[in-house]
Length: 121
Length: 231
Image (cartoon, rainbow over all chains, first blue to last red; front, side, top):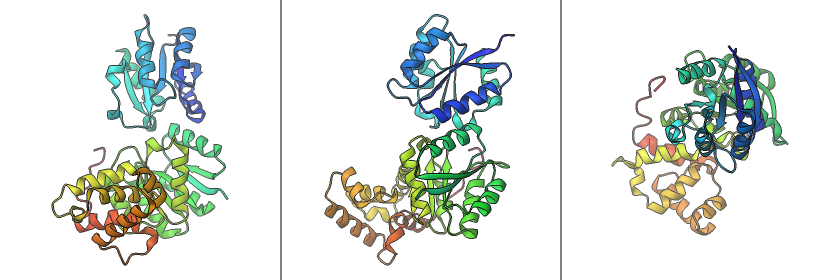
């Protein structure tokens, strides 16, 4: 089976790089792009056609919730997981079209695999 | 001079992300990272940092390891301040952390870590023996206690409560004045009244602000029941 192609969106480089490290350490997943803003994520998704977008909630410009909503409007839209250091109940995750919310503190290879499997089932 | 910091978090993403953010600022010298309380203790013993930044829920039980580590570090290495990080507002943990004294201790929500200025400010505060409480935690503590009829906070006016919230969160008089759109002199007047009503007139000035939160917590029966693990 082909690898799950992942686009990472976070405005802070250390978190972007750490997320990329987690993705690369997870069997069956590969990083295809990194974006730093919500707007950039829309352009990157259109160009790269990822299977999965890991989207930080708090972004400059349009935030991760709005970027997810716009991404999900497209035909053949990627699956989106929202990530944040914030508590989940502060967001309207379902309303955004995101398949899941993952606290950054809980994000690792196991959680990525499990959440992807749950979203795909 | 940068604050020498040891950082402990069992989450790879948080550890790498926050460590990366801290190394970007000149105000912090991150001397070591750790992934569990045992590693943390060893790193503190080796590096004798000015401040420790640590997650609360860590292996093995993922409950209060960070609180326990903070207390142990403060007892064993009094020159090291400790700032604990929490994913959620857990007033009971905050109270437990601060129940034996507030010097050199702080409690910050993880959502603040990406706001580097706030994180650095809190680390600097605990490093110099002060305190740093997350404004949201203070708000949670106060909201709960003000609803109790026996709370000494009942004696405070609404404006005094607002000032107390700012103070307990570690704000300076000037910052409080700016946040509440009042003069420095008005802030001083309210502070004096708050301390008097909470019977804090004899406390040393350094920690009286945060003591204001703790005094009325103690006066109303302390932290109450501790939440269950995972709860």
